[in-house]
Amino acid sequence: MTQENKDILCIDDDNDTCELVKFVLEQKGLPVTACNTADEGLLYARKGTFSLIILDNRFHMLSGIEVCERIREFDKETPVVFFTGESRQTEIDKAMSAGATAYLIKPNDFEKLAETVLNLI
Image (cartoon, rainbow, N blue to C red; front, side):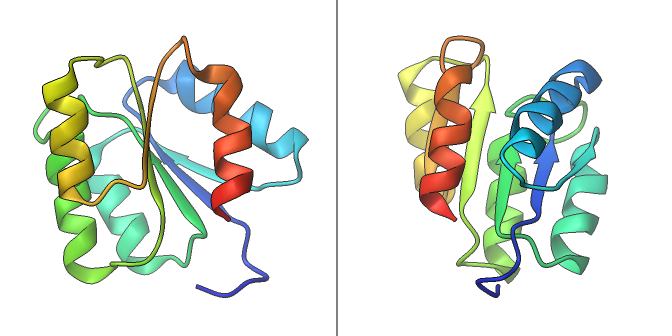
């Protein structure tokens, strides 16, 4: 990851969430690449150079925790921010153990998203 790179990867199965994240972060000058499946997100994460990854926890085949674990197999440095509706402490603990940098709960923490992203990059 280079300091000049500010591209953000958003992996969320809900297209509306991806569009909202894109809108908010692009207003801050941060380009966002969005995808809607865990497999596609892993492909982007493996091929791209992103300054940060925003990750949901619920997908059709894999959990966000599993996606995070797989990302950490090849990328131990890029911050991963969970942005999900899953608010159980056990899930938060699992995500952090899998290598997450931060965990935000939607929609409650939406206002914190841009601030968190800017602080981490």
